[in-house]
Length: 379
Image (tube, rainbow, N blue to C red; front, top):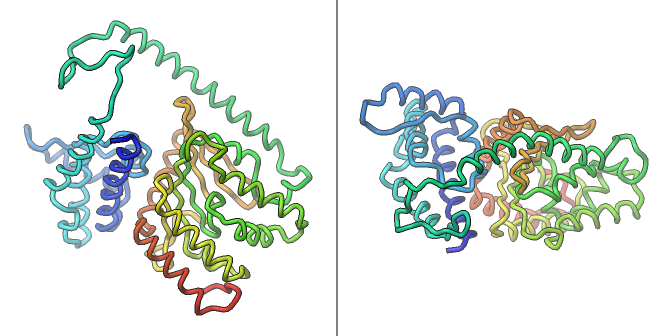
């Protein structure tokens, strides 16, 4: 089994956990943490092993930001907490499934992971099927010291990186083509260096998923004073940002879009139809996750402005959050900020349609164009 297959198995397992969370009413991470505390207090000695559901951990696991499967005690506590939340909300806890079923799913994910080759430091292999956990690595102390030194360098490296970003966009009021576009050089710098991107768009299709014709139409609306030459140059740049040739491997993109984005007024129906067709094709790509918040979703999305979260291959660089506001972009890199907005993004994914449901919703939107005129005028 390849690393890609293993990742797909893990993503499927996490998607299942999110699905049952949605089925019981999508309780907040704080509520799940509170329930887990009750489970721990009621846990008999020598009984089932529960653990606290820290919101940051739950956010990372359900957000797909961990490369390994969650440990079974966490999964068990999460499922048990969901059953409790279902009972509190008057929902049949059977929608969560049985613990035995989830145990088998978890073991299958672990087995697939263990089937991958795991080279040991220095090229040494494990001694026997169970390995040699009692063997002391003589380099352990020096490795630990190296980790401490690496941690002490993290803030310095991040500051240098953010300085590069700020240098790419030193001021918002400069003249030229970039002065009239919502795109910013700093954003593109982050985007090009990211390994994982989580993005939320309430009004338009995300840039990395746009067709050329749709990008042209949207930019023409956003920049009524732009010349044809400027629009052409901006569209070309957007298409270049999508090119896989710019990256050694495909970036993992998780996009959540509000259905209202497909009811944008003044765009030719054929352009919108082609854009939706393009999204339907992309839903099947292994490195792209696309979800749509339907107009019939309960409640309103927790965010009214676009947001993106960038994660980089360099382990010293933490996540960077970009909030695209009317008066400019705001970049956040403190851990508490990335955790907060990571949880907001997770709540969006729970509110949105699943990937399969998104495909069906997009197909319905595409087919609805047949009954409309030449221009999409909104619902």
